[in-house]
Image (cartoon, rainbow over all chains, first blue to last red; front, side, top):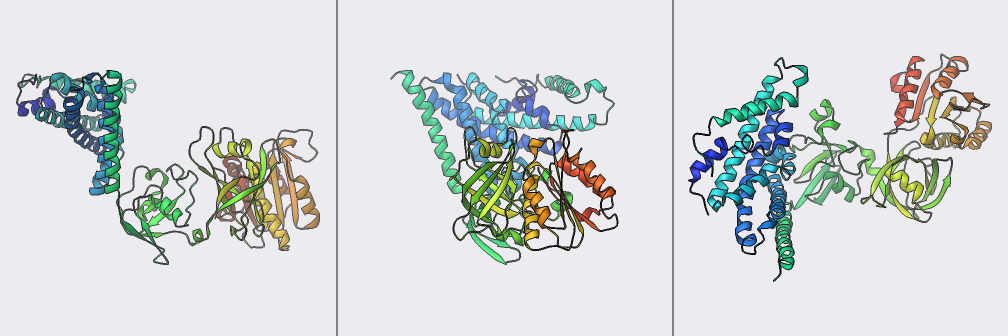
Length: 197
Length: 368
C-alpha cells in the first residue's frame, strides 16, 4: 500500500533525516575514495543524482508492470541491476553527445555508479515501502541530492583535516570514518523534522 | 505457464529491450556523420566517418601512429598534436603527458574520439608507415630463449625502413588472449631484402613473445606495421660505441651489416655484447667473420657469469669502461648506440657520460 507521505516531505526527508549515506550507509566505497577531492566529489554527486532519479522511475515501472503482474518480484535484484547498467550506458552516450564538458566532468564516474549500492538500495527501498511513481521519483531525486550533499560536506571537511594535527595512526581512512560518524550523528539532529515511511 | 519458463523469458525480454535501447541510442547519438581531418596544415586531408577513436580512424586511412598497447591508453606512445580545441585532457591521458605537451595540446590519439572536423599534426615520417601482411618464412632458435623469425613480404610490397628502426608485430588472439596484440621489435634484416627479420626473446608471461615461441608456425601470415623509431645511424666520423644485450643485438645487425655493405670505413666501430653465459651468445661467427672483412670493426662479447670463458669476463659496463680506458683513443670524438633492457642502458649511459660522451650523442632503443 502506498504510504501517506507528501512528495515534499519525502523529498526533505530523503535529503536530511534519512540521508541514504549517513542514515543507511549505502554507497560508502565511492563516498570514501572520491571525497579526497572537491571537484571529483561534485562530479560524482551529480552523476549519482541523475542516475538515481532516472533509475527510480524505470525500476518502478518495471516492478509494477512486469515483475508484480508476472509474480516475479524475487527477480528484482538482477532486473534492477540490469536496468541500472543499461541506463548508465545510455546516459554516458547522451551526455557525451550533448554536453562534452559535462561528460568530461562525469566521464569516469558514470561507469562507477553501476556498482554503487546506493542506487540499488534506493530501488529496493522503493519496492519495500510501496511508493507511488511520483513518490519514487521524488525519493530517488532526494536521495541523490542527499548523497551529493554528504560527499561535498565530507570532501570539504577532509580538505580542512589535511592541515589538522591528526595522530599518525588515524591519518587517511581512520579519521575519515570517524568524521563520517560525527556527520551521521549531526544528521540525526534533523530526524525530528519528518520521518520517512 | 510455469515460473521456469516465465522467469527466463521476462528477464530475457527486459534485457533484450534494454539492449535494443542501447543499440538505438548508439546508432542515433554516436552518429557523428562525415568528418574532415586536416593533417599538417592541410598537406593531407581525410574525409572519414566520425565516432571512432582518432588512432583507429587514422589507421583505417593507412596512417599508423605507433601504439605499443594497441589503443588501450596504457603505453602513452600514440601522441598527436591536435590544433582544434577539443576540450580538456581526459584523466586517462594526463599521466602520459608532460606539462609542456599538455600546453601544446598534445593528445593520446587512442583516447580522442573523432566527433567533428579536426586539424592535427603528426610527424611526416609516419606517412611512410605501412601495414603489410607477411608470411612467416622461417623460425630458428638462436639461443634457449631467442628466436630468429623471418617474414616474407608480399610481391612488390616493402617496409621502407632505416637500419635500426622497429616494426610492430600484430599477434592474433590465441588461448586465453581474446584480442589481437601489437608489440614492437627492432628489425635485424637489411632494408632492401624481401624479408623482414626479427629477433624475439621469450619474456615470461609475455603475450606476443609466448605466441611467437609456442604457437607461431612457418607459413602463417601476420601483420607487420612500420617503420617506427629514431634509433638509426648518424653519419659522422665519431667512433661508434655500440652496446647490446640479448635480443638488443637486432638493430645492430641491420645497422652494422648495412655500414659494411656501403663501405663505411671512415670511423672505428666497436660492438660490445653482454650476456650471462655461453648459452646466451649467438651470431658469434657472423661478427667474427665481419671483423676479418671490415678493418674498422671490432666485436667484443663479454660474459658475466662464466669464469671459465676465454674472452672478456664481467658486466658489459665494466668491459666497456676498460676498453675506453685502455684500448681507445681518449681524445677521439665518440657516439654511443645502445639497445637493451632499461637497467643495462642506464648503466652504460653512466659509463659513457663519465668518459665525456655528450648526452645528445648517446642514441638508444630502450625495451619498455
